[in-house]
Image (cartoon, rainbow, N blue to C red; front, side, top):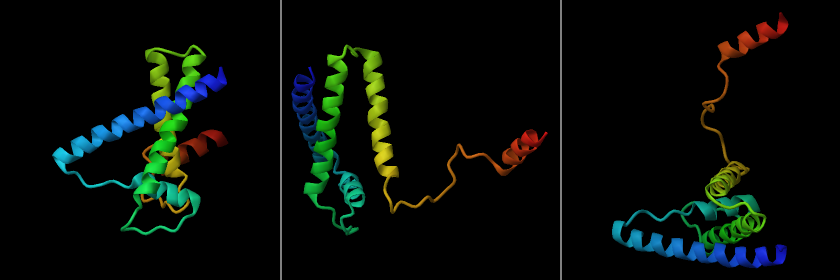
Amino acid sequence: MIRRARRQGLVAGTAGSVVMTLGEKIEAGRDRPPRLRCPARVLRRLTGLPEHPRTQPLPLNLDMHFGQAALFGVLRSVMAQSGLRGPVASAQFTVVRLTNDQALENADPDRQRTSTPATAPTPAAQARTAQAAAA
């Protein structure tokens, strides 16, 4: 089962990434948005490669893009082979994909926090919690 799921996932993930990339290229040809190099930047920072702010090589961008697609294609294939199918499984997989993207961006060792997260407790809330714990 795992061998079959791996093969199906690699093919499906890569094929899906190719189709989506072609669609994005067609859309970009019509709208002319700026080229994004976020995948290449994240891959450079995570692997310790030197970063050049104005130039992010296309091969690194594609490596990260297609590598993640193939990897998560295998995960989705294993989910399907295990019986996790339908809208609930698709929603679960979406959460996994979005969490992965956020985790990779947050794992960037050079990333600096510029603001306090919205979920951080305020100083007043921290004081109330400390008083309640002391009582």
